[in-house]
Image (tube, rainbow, N blue to C red; front, side, top):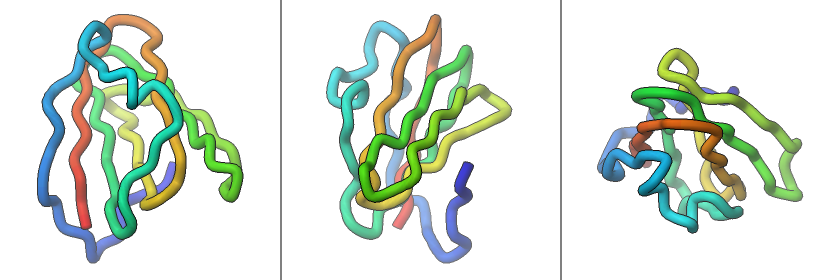
Length: 93
């Protein structure tokens, strides 16, 4: 799993999503804007995180409260609910 670069600064957070409130847009391939990094923090349960971008090495990770996910700028990715979950995305630039 990637890590956030030292130079990025948090500027906003998503609402807390649950398995019943996660937006459909997050479940299919999507990207952040140029220069925007994300950190997916699972508060409860687990979440499958996939890097689906054709220009990057495909990756799949199970995110848990002890294993957050990092989203690189402009790299297509998606999440999959695999059970009861609560998570939030923190955005950095």
